[in-house]
Image 1 (cartoon, rainbow, N blue to C red):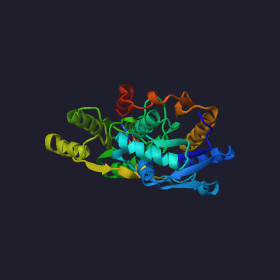
Image 2 (tube, helix red, strand yellow; image 1 turned 135 degrees about the vertical axis):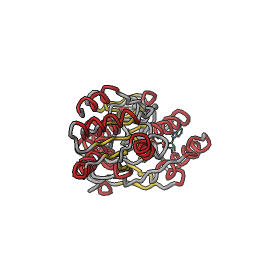
Image 3 (spheres, rainbow, N blue to C red; image 1 turned 45 degrees about the vertical axis):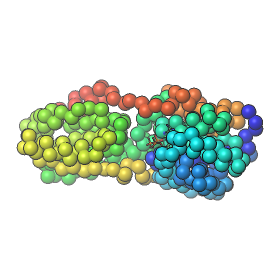
Image 4 (spheres, helix red, strand yellow; image 1 turned 30 degrees about the horizontal axis):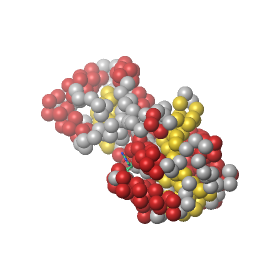
Length: 325
Ligand code: ATP
């Protein structure tokens, strides 16, 4: 492999709090090793538009505490086409970019890894998605902050729910991933959690609420993972009313969970991942993901990190139910 002098860096897919920490870490680790870093705005779309400019030490100053990403991000469906990736490879070559670092989820890693296998461009994936659903890594940047944001919101909802003796259905993010819902359910003392992979048993939810009322509970919180089809929380609300004569309120937390200042955990892990990305590239590793395994950031083969991991862990559902009797 020829010597690496110039690195490209982009974010792709959904943004997550802590991406800026990873950007800062990549840029400063690279400059420290006498490499140049070029920031690509708006993910693979920006790469195809040639929206690329050099990042210096100061350009990543004062960003560690901010959510979102200074590089912005995008979804670029046309990147699934070989011709588009060929064009991207040409642009990287023209800009004399020797290696590319992609911060994103498993979709972004599929795009990055295919670009590597087809065109030989050294490639690094840094896991960044609030869903924590990338195979091959125990953790992805943004999850801890997103969970804490949702916990803060549910705690506030619980205050009003108990004052008015109400049931709230709180919808959290996670199209296919159950991870946020499970963590938030356990940490807020929710009465029930509905996961994306489940058939919803509204009768069971109703029984749980009624049992709580009987023993003097003055509020119930049902956490619902958004799932792939919109409107699940409202369907549960309607069924609770129609079939079980239970009134409830729906609160959809939505994009609030993507923003906010990254937690200490997200800042720490993102900083470690950015540093390892540069260290491994300099060692000659030309295709890897900065995975988090057993409490450490390690270089893992790309092909172990391309799937969505399933976080359906029945023991957490049992935990929620046991603790909310
Ligand atoms: P998040 O989990 O936050 O949604 P993600 O990276 O999984 O992040 P996707 O929308 O799945 O998000 O993918 C982001 C982008 O990665 C896509 O818009 C596309 O540009 C690229 N991509 C996804 N899958 C592929 C693929 N199979 N081949 C090539 N490129 C892909």
